[in-house]
Structure formats: structure tokens, C-alpha cells
Amino acid sequence: MKKITFSLFIILFSIGVQAQEAEVIYLYKGKAPGTENWNWEEGSQDNKTFNTKIVYNVTQPSLTVVKPDPSKANGTAVVVCPGGGFQLLSINSEGFYVANWLAAKGVTVFVLKYRLFKSVTNDPAMEMMAKIQGGKMDSNTTKIIGMAVSDGKKAIEYVRANAAKYNINPNRIGIIGFSAGGTLAASAAFDFTKENRPDFVAPIYAFFPPNQQPVAKDAMPMFIAAATNDQLGLAPHSVSLYQKWIEAKQPAELHMYSLGGHGFGMRKQNLPSDSWIERFGDWLALQGLLKK
Image 1 (tube, rainbow, N blue to C red):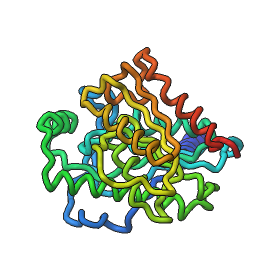
Image 2: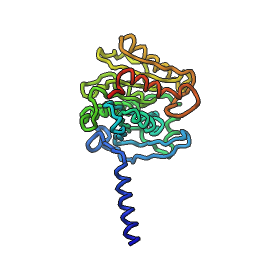
Image 3: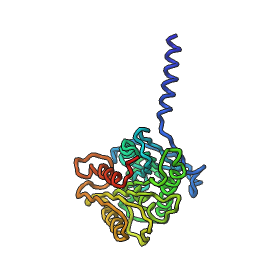
Image 4: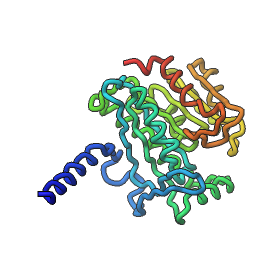
């Protein structure tokens, strides 16, 4: 009898665990266009260089759904794009920790894993730093960034097409990204279609060099945050984006912290930049996006 009871407990426990597993959606049927020959496996590790969990070798872009409590759900959705120099994804600090904070506010969140460079060692973070220090953009770099940007836009398109399934207002879908993920968020604000147009964007210490593309007449509100002492020198990228938006007479809010460095994400450094997520919440509320 004890054996039967124990076996039943294990079965029920397994069912409970499965029920709590997050929903994962793959953005493409089969392999993503242009990566049909990619045959390496996605990996993850607790990286010592970043002191956080990272994901690398992403070949099949996906969304992980983080849902709010049904009683708090307000119909707003956000696609979250972690950063990592297109070599890796800082999946917690710039991904799931952000998602959990937003879900507590009633937002339905989709954490994006987008395509990355292939890691050829067991230390993707060191590979990323070597590429950043090299500072060279070749045709392969441009290709990978283009694929990642496409994945970001595809994610918005998916969320809008499935808005009813997740009880989302199709006119309240935004995107937030960090560093390389900020490239995806900022890029979503240009060359969009009706299907993949975000309703608001939030590039956080984004890599987005000044470009000549005009700001669309129907551009969306933009929230920007970065630190002046960004070690990668990306602060001017945020300033440039802000200037483009206000010159085009489009709504924008910029928070430039004197200290914080690059990649602060949800890490606590006992600096004013720690509160950027609260300021983002204030901004969402001001836009009416936290009301049901």
C-alpha cells in the first residue's frame, strides 16, 4: 500500500511540475530561413564572467510566455529581448527577471531567444568580449544581426496574430531590449508593417548607431534608458535615438544615469540606475498601458 501511495505521489507531483512549466513557442515551422544548415545545439550555463545564467548557440528562435495572475491581467503585452553581443543572451537579468516584474503589473510577457553567432568554445562570454574589443563588422556580423532583427519583428507579429489566445489587446503590444536586444527593439520602430508594428518600444543601453532612416509619421512612443559611463561607449546611441524622436515630434522619454555602466539590467548596484524598471513602470502607467 505504501508503494502504491508513493507511486501515486510521484505521478501527481510530475503532473504538477508539467502544469507549471512555461509555454515555449517556436517562431518558425522547421528551421528559420537562412539557417537551414545550422546543426549545433543550444546551450546554457551559469557564466562566471557575467556572474549570471546565459544562453548561447540559439538556432531556433522562440518565445517563452510569462503570464500575469488572471485577476491582474490588463491586456498589455511586451516582447523582452535579452542582450549579449549577439553571441549569448543574459537570459535572467535582461530576460526573465524583467518578465516577472512586468507580469506582477498585469502584463503578459514573451521572452525572446533570437539567433546568435555560433560559439566555438565553452566560454561564449569571452568570445563575445573578444569580438567587441576587435570592433570589426564584417558581412557575417551584418547577416547575424539582420536575422536577429527579423526574429524580433516576427515575435511581435506572432503576439499580435495570437492576441485573442492570450487575452491581449492587439493595439497594446510593445518590445523592450537590452544592448544587442536593444538593437532589436529600436529596429522594430523602423520599416514596420501593420502586422509587426510595435505600439511602444524601449531600447535599454541599446547598440544602435545613428542611421539615416526617417522616423515614421505613425511612430510609436519610446522609452530609453542608459548610463553615461557605459563601458562600451553606447550612451550616444541612446541620445541619438531620443533626438530623432523629438525632432520628429514623436513622444519619447530618456533616462541617462551618470553611473550604472553597461548591462545593468535587473542587477542591484546601489545606484540610481537600479530604479530604471520603476521609471519604465511609471512610463507605462502614463501611457495608460497598465489599466485594464
